[in-house]
Length: 283
Image (cartoon, rainbow, N blue to C red; front, side, top):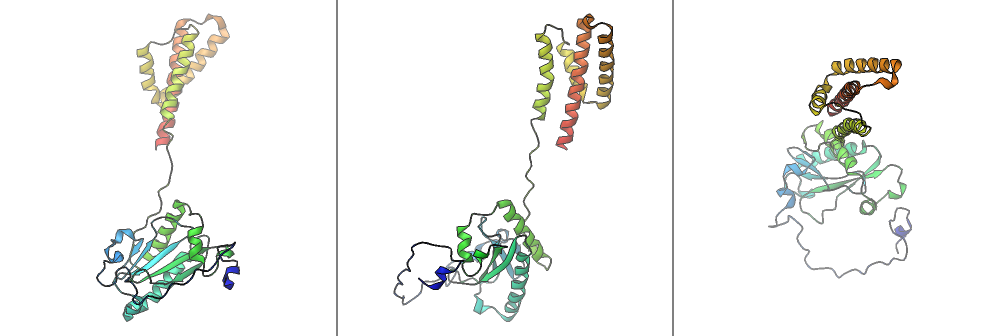
């Protein structure tokens, strides 16, 4: 085994052996997009990228990976590295520094590795891989291997990072296409059900105890009017006053009519408060 197998950054351990090299071929196979073959980069629309300009495009993977950020810088023209004209060659240096700074500005990024292999596609593309801060074991040339080994980062964090890098690049021109993730929240849709349950329960309990309650038409009318905050406050005040007075005067002297009035008033006030809470929550 070579010496780098003992490096702390080497991703594997245990009994390993080096593969036997195949015999060299006489003619190498064509790369993707080379010769008459269709170029996938040229066929991909701008909407698949996070940032585009007149001469450059930046794309991400189709899903989060183990590193905080992995991006690919591509020339819009179908050229290889050695074919870049002077203008694009000069801009490549500027774009490399600009993209490295944008990625390094993300939280938790210590270094950005810049790699160009070019054995898979004839269309010029350069890789940018972010190393997480504090992960010293990921330093060095094996970072791309660790990207496939580490568990993927959360998709929300990944999309937010993409939007931040795209916004950074857009400050110097071009057009950003990456958007931050939507805020994930859920309205408590069960409030209406809880309000209904809260109104039905006391009425049922009163009926079980053998006390008369308001007629359905009156209860429905009180429920419809329960959303008026002013009416609720007035009803609650009257109910409290009347109830206290009845208890002080004669605890056992309640009549069916008194109980009906109390149940109706209390029910309307309860619904009004819950309806108001529902409206505030929906807002």
